[in-house]
Length: 295
Image (cartoon, rainbow, N blue to C red; front, side):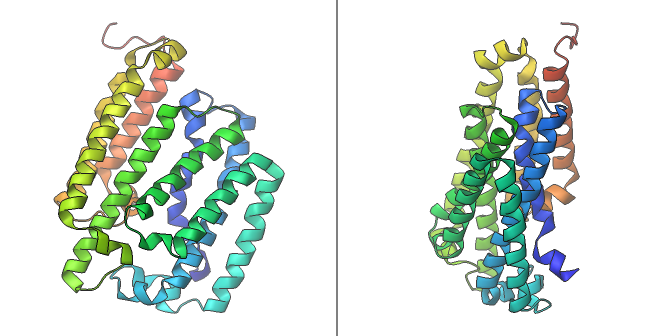
């Protein structure tokens, strides 16, 4: 069980971003493409787990000081360093082998993700602002991988919104680190020295506003209206705004923004916002003939 926890399977939910191009293109039920992306999801998850293992290996001492990270297999000592290396090598072989047989371009992007995150683990994570940009870029690469595997073009709007949303989550996580530092008196990560609450609060406010405006412009763009034959996509903005406001409430009011993944698993409001957004978006683009509000 501890070996499985070493892979951080809860974090694999982030790799569902590979399916975004399929969903937004209206081809989520195209079985061959869906199977292709599903295999890509497995490959990406294994390589992402390799990054987590490397990161945990290097951060054993600092993780021991963290109230939550101290329970991780390597930090707690439930998995030895030798065992972690064995699992790492196994995941690398399987993950890259699947990518190789799927598509060379997917293998190329996946390799960029792995190298970028290696650089992150070996020093770039200590440079404030650059650290969150690298994290956000990882989500963009996930979407690009999904587009490559499904032969679907990922638009500039989609890339921009994914990047902005990932930046919000990354900055919120850094805010949690600053709060922990204020309580414990020690830095959770070196990059935290370049942040304070005032800066992070302003950054989150600006990014949230830009994300909402970008989504509005995306849903009202002529390209989307012509593609789907409907102007109703802007209805879904309500749920996007609700989800972002709830996330800011968790960060600013409840001070519990440490793990975006944990929030997604636990917070009913955000779960509901995402679910209703998916359902509404689904019916608008897959069943455009349905009239809403008597239109």
